[in-house]
Length: 433
Image (tube, rainbow, N blue to C red; front, side, top):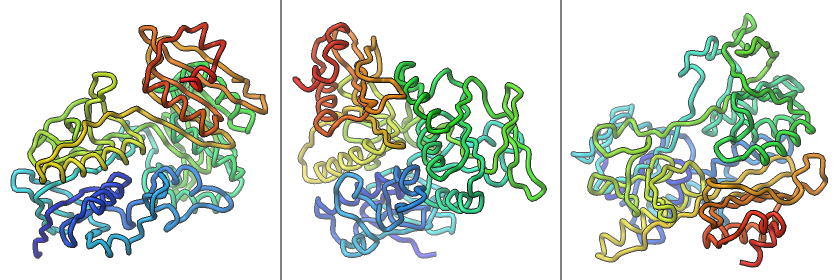
């Protein structure tokens, strides 16, 4: 097969790739210089929609409605957008070999792609129950959610298993968002997770108690402290029951698994320096290999605010790291410099009529404020994290746009405060900063 050659190649076609493409266009990339190589069959889209509006029973989101960069208020980049800019969108193409020394990528179909500068934006893949040797984990109607094909399969199952029973395995982002959207589809939901409360990487027990109570009020049955150890099937291979470690057996027409993800770094193993499970970069997302950058989920980068290096799996960082890398690429070509990446960690979620945002670091002592009663009609509450006498993190449920900006600012500025003061003032403390 003929070899294709580009000045710049982005490998991966997710959120980072789309936002990087926009920045390349802003920086004046010339037609024919840039290619995006993606194993997905569609142009980059805003992945968070898959666990939210894509699964709504009415008025569901569909492509081309949520191509990047609409998720951050930007222009919607349809395939025509890439064509107009002279950007090659090479879809349904999985890269199976990367040779960084010879600057060559090879696809599953045997095509070769040469580059001068590479942006690694391969993202993450879901952890599967079969990875842990769970019996029956390859039964039909056990779903994972990462790409649009996964979401399409789940949509079809919701149609064929109308008013059926679902078991959600995992109590993190996917578990909470999917159990909510399945209830909207009038599916009976059991949510199972081993931890003492939901979303334990971020939520404290106090925050989690609200969401668990709220979800139970919405008809989600929560089973904590155990895991799925096996699946029984109907003769046609479809899942019938979920066996739990504590001996319980749950009926299920549909199972959705959300037990985490791992960054897709395998192509580059042994060729590039790694740290904390990702590809190690500097504050410009340059890796240890010249002319190779890594962005989004795969990058382990300096978190300047906390004098730490971390890997962050979130759409906000996927967008911003991609933009930073492309700015840095053009700056280095022009002999200019750009500011170091100075990221404020940000996470958010929407489910039912709830909407929370978190900024900063969830370390230190905590104080909960506001109305965290799951039976309340207002359910507006939040939490601060204090370390060394300063606020380092802030969480808010059902905040206004101004209040969400205020908690972002307070997490960035890190003003001194006491627990008593914050308990009394609540969101007003942040609003004054």
